[in-house]
Each structure stands twice: as structure tokens, then as C-alpha cells.
Amino acid sequence: MLLDQAREQAATLIAARADEVVFTSSGTIAVHTGMLGALDGRRHTGRHLVVSAVEHSSVLAVADRHRLDGGDLSTVPTDETGQVSSAEFIAALRPGTALACLQTANHEVGTLQPVGAVAQGCRSAGVPLLVDAAQSLGWAAPEPGWSLLAASAHKWGGPAGVGLLVIRTGTRWRSPWPADQRGSGRWPGFEDVPGAVAAVTALAAARASADADAIRLSSLVDQIRREVPERVPGVEVVGHPTERLPHVVTFSCLYADGETLLAELDREGFAVSSGSSCGSSTLQPSHVLAAMGALTSGSIRVSLPRTAARGDVEHFLAILPDVVARVRALLGSDDL
Amino acid sequence: MTAPGTPSGEPIRSTLVDSRGRRCPLPVIDLARAAKGLRPGVELVLLADDPAAATDVSAWCRVRGHLLVGQDGDRFVVRLGVG
Image 1 (spheres, rainbow over the protein chains, first blue to last red):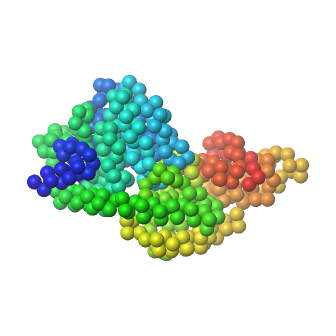
Image 2: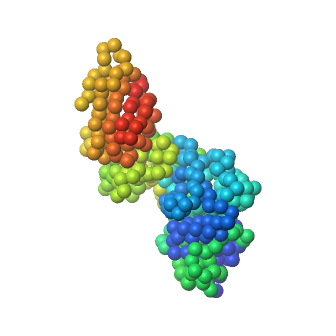
Image 3: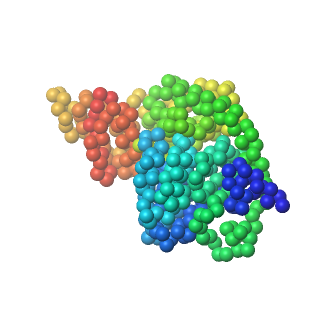
């Protein structure tokens, strides 16, 4: 009963039907289940998969495995803002394409993708499109025309460990899990009822204030984009300046390392993240920044919470020049 | 490891920067330090095996107005611009 209500409410907020909504145990597993099921459901059509170069690692992990299993993979590049061209994406579709995947917005640099135009192209080509809406669903429903949608509740303030998978009616999809009597055969075992209710309640709350929050946060991001290069030498702001999420901004600092920047900003009370390999256990730089041709070392991603105020941003902008200068001094690069 | 440009300003390839074994952002810092004071047109050869070097050397060239002439494995050839 509660679960049915949650499904109804989620469907309304996503512009889908209740019986198309599945609650999964994370956004990652929603992506995996959606992709694997669509690839399997259309294996007689072909084994060609199309993804963008800047998809979330959960999408690229399935793509890698698909390729290792003998499937074909096309990776569509982006421009320097991290945006794919819809024409180029659609041109990658071919008769044997089983599935195409595109994010609504990039998780590292905030750039929006042309999901509406790509969905139309996929429809015309008869190829299902899976949209990874994790970053944007708390702001708005994606443009229509997609066949599958995956999202993650903690991105909009819901609980971690709840994902959403939506499979539109008529989409060829075969569950990667053995048949189960529950979840209309789409998801094995019970769904997490309290998690689903909390996720949908949080989504509704996020949407209720989305328009006002977007205007406020977007203006703060504009201020960061404008003032960081004025205040700090050797900095490049990356991502699309206008076609972007309201709350995410990324910039890269020459001659500084991401890990020390994060530690120094943490000491100042700011929790940010980095796409630098210096701070990652794999030593691999961010595939998103690399695809954009952006500097990966010294990268800082600021993701503003809905509660961020102008004073917080001004404080950040005030301490940033000294933080970057300190990190450069530690590396002996402050004279470059 | 670094040698100055020739007085004539002709392109030379005598400047070698060995950053092998050094992690990001050190290869780019080494390169920038070697480039300091050299005139436009001088070529530097950087050896760097950090996984981020391919992306970061190319981005550094773009941001600083230099030209990445070529890359072969861990060997990068950069021609300095006006900087």
C-alpha cells in the first residue's frame, strides 16, 4: 500500500507510469540492471552499445564488461565543455545497436546533455535510450522520449542505498536476475519500503523548491565561475557556462595537487571533491576531465547544497587564493 | 637537466626534462620550470610516465599557449609559444 503510493508519486514526478517504476538498492544497481536487461532483451537485434565518454563510472563499467564479453562499443566524445553533440551521438547508432546511454547532466562538471534531441533520434532509429538522471531528477523530470531511466535517491536528499529504475512500457528488456514472482519480475525479492517512501518524499520536497533554489544557487555558481579566475592565477573553470546544473562548478588549478587542495579546504571547513588522480587510489585521472581535454591535476568540484548562502560562497572565495598559494608553496611551484 | 635556448633562437631539442616516476602534478611543474626564461620556438622533451601526464601536458600547453608537437608513450615534445 505504502509502496504503491510511493510508486504512484515517483511516476508523477518522473512523468512515467507507476507500473514502470522499480525501487532498487542503489543508483548504481539501477544503471546496471537497466543496461544489462536492455542489452539482453535486444541481443537478437545486435550487440552494439553507444555511450558518451563522460558517463558515470557505473555506466562505463557495464560498457567495459559488454566489450570484454564480445559486444561492440561506441564511445561518443564531447566538446571542451563536456557536452556531446546530439547529431554525433545519433550518427553513432546503427542497425545492430541494442542500447544507447546518455546522462542528463554530468556529475563532475555539471554540463547538461541534449537528452531531448538524442531521445528523438533514438526513437527514429528504433534504439532504446537509457538516461542516467541521477544528477538532475531532483531539479526536473528529463525531457521525454527515453526508454529507461536510472537515478539515485541520495542525490536529491533522500536516503543512500535507494535507486530508481524506470522501464517504459514496450521497451524490450529481460531481467538479468532469475525470474521472481515479486516486482513484476523486474526486481528479485522485496523492495525497501521505508527507503522507497523516504526517497519519494525527498524527491517531492526537492521539486517543491526546485525553481527558487535553482535561481539562487545558479547565481552563486555564476559568482564562483566569474571570481575564481580573477582572484587566483593559473586557474581554468571548466564545464558549460550556461547549459549546466544549478549547483555544480569545477575548476582546475595549475601547479597544485588535488589531494592537498582538498585537505587544506577541509581545514577551512569546506568539503569539496577532486577529479585529480593525485587524490585517487587508482592514480587514474578523471575520465570526464580527460575527455574534455581539461587539466586534471589540481581540480576542485564545488557542489553547493540547497542551503548554501551567499555568505558561504563569499567566505570560500576569500580563503581560496591563500589556500592555493599555500599548496603551490608546498610543491615549490609558487614562482611559476 | 635543462639547457638554454640557442642565442639565434632556432628551434633546438637539447632540453630534456625527466619526470619519470614523479606523480601529478609534478611532471607539469617540472616542465613549466624548465620552460621558464626560454624563448618561443624552443622545444622541450618531457619524459613522464604518470597516467595523468597525457591529459595534463596537453592541457598545460593549451592554457599556456604552447604547442604539443607530439607524444609517443611517455615521451612528449613541446614547442614553446609566447607563454
